[in-house]
Amino acid sequence: MTEALVNMVLLTLMAIVTVGVVRTRNLFGVVMLGSAYSFLMASVMIVLDAVDVAMTEASVGAGISTVLMLSVLYLTKSRETVPTHTPLIPLVLSLGMAIMLFYGVSGLPPFGAADTMVNQSEVSTYYLQNSIRDTGVPNVVTSVLASYRGFDTLGETTVIFTAGVGVLMLLRGRRKRNAEPKKEA
Amino acid sequence: MRPDAILQIMSKLLLPFILVFALYVQFHGDYGPGGGFQAGVITAAAVILYAITFGLAPAQRAAPPWIAELMMPTGVLIFTGVGVVSLFKGGNFLNYTVLGHDQVHAQEWGILLVEIGVFVTVAGTMTTIFYAFAGRGR
Amino acid sequence: MAILTEVIQHYNQWVTIFLMVAGLYIVIARGNMIKTLVGLSLFQTSVYLLYLSPGKILGGTPPILDKAFSVYSNPLPHVLILTAIVVGVATLALGLALVVRINEAYGTIEEDEIVDMDKDGHA
Image 1: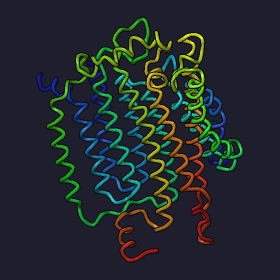
Image 2: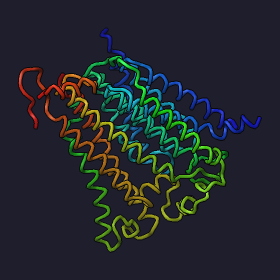
Image 3: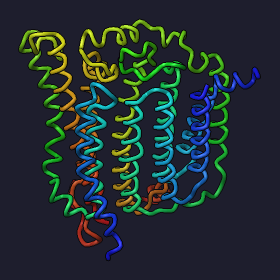
Image 4: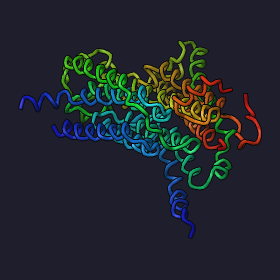
């Protein structure tokens, strides 16, 4: 019961921060609110018993993302221009999608139930019962990530490597100020 | 006293603890929350903190860009290397059981090496991306 | 009282939908590229919440095996979302690099101005 209440309070704070992100014009404020949002998300993940995920979200979402966005803000400008007309079609589209999703979500099982199909699946129960016998590692998330589903982790590492190569290709070489043309292709 | 003296003194005090914490998260990922990704990002965060408080040039003297760029493919190489060694020893690709004499020992070796590979790649990539953004002239 | 249990049971899903729709609105309605990227990361984070909520068991513990506990939360969504978070930050880094290059080529990061510049035949 306390868990559910703490969960609800944190989620309400996240919704308030999101409204702030939509309404703010100052881009610096938007980036800072995004960082606060990531920290709140990490807290919600701890209440949901996802401790590995919470650590990753706190360090990656609230750390690296914020630093990169601030450095890009330094390189561009920091104020969003006010639009001339209210965007009607995106608003209608978003509200329509929200209504459809609200209707669709009413069939989902209640929060925290132990007898849903997700929690009774034989894959999860196999991992929880046999992780120590097969791999000797008590942290089930690490053993699934590194041993039972190691191929996915190999693909993920390659994706990070590709992102690094892509950023290097785009941003390699220092741009001089109005003096000479850009050096790289 | 310069205005950023407090930041510089506190960063110098905190940096060794951040780096040791990253290694702790890496090697205790088996027994608590943690693993390669979190440890790599925390290491990159330590380098970024040093660059923010002391300037980009001292940070690039301490953690040179060529080392960070070299770390990016090395991690993927370690990961794939574990798989290829399993192939040579008679098992399938990334089958850790054939790496040692006993199933549990071999799995622990495999998981350790794979997480080290992930750590090296993530730390190198995050540092490289930060250097690429911060080194761009305006 | 019944409405309170109803709210507690479905609150996670309602807030997930709100965050998802807010992120989508930012992506399609705003023209500033940095704000679009922030909206995209909001959208992605709401999807993480959508995956992690059904895995939680009230009265369970995090999935780290120990002799003192017997009910653990479901570890499978945690593994999938860990991968998704890291892939999300890789996409964000590439998107931000593109924003920097676009800014250097056009001088602005507002989509309306860039479309106008392209129509006028900017080099």
